[in-house]
Image (cartoon, rainbow, N blue to C red):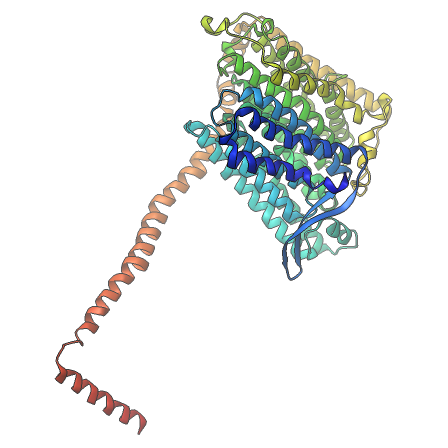
Length: 634
């Protein structure tokens, strides 16, 4: 089986080529079989690598670049970290591909959709399995390309096309940081291979080298803020909801947006040498978690609530890795993949039943029609709210605990931000549940009779993901609850050089866990009090009292408008009035193109006067030329 492991990324690439080139010639069942089957191959091989504990420094397929001391291979690195990541990516990806067969069944361009989805799987698996920064960057850019293609999949809609372009441009800003960080690392170590850099970084480094590593890791983190939608480069992710719901589940909840977190965990041996960078990571993560959660309180678009929730939960992950709790960050990454993918797919099922309606104010009472979607989304909401025994409780509680006991500046403040975010998360998620499934139906009456549960291809993935949302916490049950923290032990060979967290007392763990659960329950109870009956008088009264504050949050703090005024419009003005008029039309067209043409035309006119057509004139010039030569020579 090990000889087949290269098919883990390459099988979806084959699916992309087959459906992309020939999919229009096939009937839809063949397209589904190719798209789903290639991902199933990857999942089976990833599962085998995981259960056998396969570990290899690299399986090199070919040399991509060899120039001087720079060598970059397309090599696949298998270790505990990559094994568990590819299992998550292929497992969640397989379920979402199966769901897509039902969700996209009425779409006329379904071969293109599955081709893009397969290409994304190839890029994401390349990113995860890369054994060097350069190949990771290839996968990094690949998932960015697929994000652009899939967000703007329905490109006939201007909003979808604009959202795809916005995601592409914002991510390029972050990617510049990643590139610069990579250049600095190569200048320091002379290699971009992870294991080689880790070996070289383990020796004593002087202060100037450590300072450069600090700059490099900060630049890498800028790349992560773009890919994983953190402040200030988060604005593309809510607009990415213009893509089909399976895209939101696969790319913008479970896999691609976690790439930044994964990159930091993979590079933990560098980040622990840059404590100032790690503090920046933790602060940005904590602030993003709270900031996005407040916006989620006020949104009515069901997918945008989940989008801001994703931004917030990613903030939790960065808070963890910034505190040096790399295992806790990965733990939440894994549990979040289950319950957030489930929430997005559930939202897609609701849209499917509601004729693509997104406004929760036009829903209500759907629980009597959707006997699978409602309970599975309810389970996912309990998980993200951090209610035991659901998986989100264990991973979120571990992050809050590590934040509380970490011996770094502002750790208690960041813990408080995380705790407040937990309460807000519980509130806005159950606000979504109660507005969508409880109370009276508030949509058009003619639509109510058509509301129905999805077919098996969409319902079965919901059930499996719900099981994951319940059970995934088993891998990281802490010692104070009688668990062995299997995940921490499993990742020890990869994170052996990560700083050990200061262990608090068992009593401290119990108190913090109880407090976090009580905060989550408070959020749920408040949401129930405001929204369970489907009447909004209480919430509208609060909104009226808050006035400008509520409107500011409702309009997402007007950050998009601020960026538009400060960045976009000035760039457009500079482009139109300076670059176009002065540089393009004035310098390029006026001087270099038209100007040079005029100069040589005039020069030609002058020279042409020498061509008189009279032989007497030519003889005179000939004699003059001979005389000048004699004068110069003699």
